[in-house]
Amino acid sequence: MPRIAVIEGDGIGHEVIAEGVRLLQALDSAHGLDLSFEHLDYGAQRYLDTGVTITPEEMQGLRDYDAIFLGALGDPRVKSNVHAKDILLGMRFQLDLYINLRPCKLLDARYCPLKDKGPDDLSFTVFRENTEGLYTGIGGQFKRGTADEVAIEAEMNTRKGVERIIRAAFAYADTHGLKRLCMSDKSNAMRHGHDLWQRVFREVAAEYSEIEASHLYVDVLTMEMVRAPERFDVLVTNNLFGDIVTDLGAQLQGGIGLAASGNLNPEARIGMFEPVHGSAPDIAGQGKANPLAAALSAGMLLNWLGHPELEKRIEQAVSHCLANELITPELGGSLSTSQVGDALIAAAS
Ligand code: NAD
Ligand code: IPM
Ligand code: MN
Image 1 (cartoon, rainbow, N blue to C red):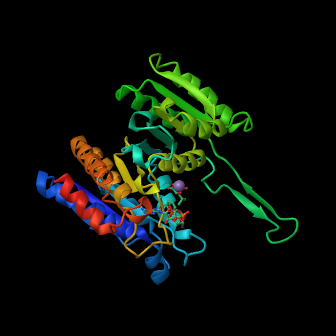
Image 2: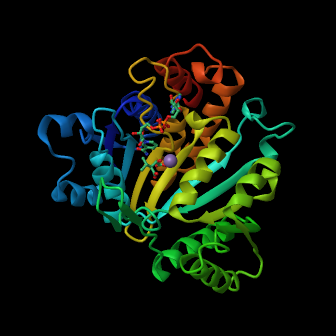
C-alpha cells in the first residue's frame, strides 16, 4: 500500500492540493492503486499556533513515505519566512533531494506567449541542483543596521553536488532518447564555483558521445529560451539559476499555474512533488487558483510510484481542460479551482 504524505502548506496550497488529492483518489479507485494519504499540517498556521515549524523527528519521518505531495509555503503573517526555510528547504537539504526535476512542456499552443510556437517547439526538462549553490544560508551579516553594514551570501558548489546533478541530467537524456543537453552557468564572471561546473560537465559529457553537450551562460540561456526554445531537450543548472529559468519556462508553457516539479533522491527513494508556483496570497481562499500544476505534479508522483501510463492520462486530462477552456480566471476562463478539479476527474476517468 503506497503511503503518500500530503502537506498542503499555505495559501492556495490548500486549494490546489485538495484537487490533486481528489484526482489521485479517483485514479486510485479506477485502477486499484491502493494509495493511502496522510495529511500533515506543517505550515504557517501551525507555526503561528505552536511556534513549531517541523521537528527533527517529523523531518526524519518523511523518509518513510513512498511519496510526498506538497502545496506551497509562504504566508504574509510570517515575515521571516522561517517556516518555509525549515519545511521546504529543510526537506530539500535534509532529505538530500538533489534533483529538482522541472519539465517545461507546452500542451496547447494557444497558451504560449511566443509567436508561432507550438507543442513541438517547447518540450524540455530542467535539472535544477537542489541542495547547494546560493541556497545554503552560508554567510553572515556584520555591523547590521549601521552605515558600515556587510552582508555576505556564499555560493557553495561541491564536486559531489555538481557531479550528481550533471550525471542525473545525462542519464535522463540517455534513457529518454533525448539528444541535446545544455549546461548553464555564469563561469565568465564566477571563476571558482562555475569553473568547477565547467570541468565536471566536460568530464561527464565525454562519457556520453551520442548526446550533444552544449553550454550557455545563463543570461544567454534566458534569451534563447524565448527566441528558440526548440533548441532544448534537457537543461542542467545550479539552484538559483534553476529557480529563475523555470519560472520563465513556466510562462512559456502557459503560465505558472501549469508548471509541475519533483524533488528527488532516487538512491534513497525519496520523492517530493509540488507545483512550481507559490502560495499566491493575492488570490488565496477565493477559489481562483489553477489546480493544473498540482494535477501534473500528481502525475509525476504516480510515475514515481511506477505508473507512467497514469501520468500520461493526467497530462491528457490537462490538455482536455485547456482545449475546452475548462480553466481558471488567470488563463482567461471562468471556472473555479474545484470546477477545474471536477473537469480533470471526468477527463481522466
Ligand atoms: P507565487 O507563485 O505564489 O505567485 C506569483 C503570481 O502568480 C501571483 O500573482 C499569483 O496569484 C499567481 N499564481 C501563482 N500560482 C497560481 C495558480 N496556481 N493559479 C493562478 N495564479 C497563480 O509567487 P510569489 O507571490 O512570489 O510568492 C508567494 C509566496 O509563496 C512567498 O512567500 C514565496 O516565498 C512562496 N513560494 C513558495 C514556493 C514553494 O513552496 N515551493 C514557491 C514559490 C513561492
Ligand atoms: C521554488 C521557490 C522556492 C525556491 C522558494 C520559496 C524558497 O521559489 O520552489 O521555486 O526558491 O526554491
Ligand atoms: Mn521558484
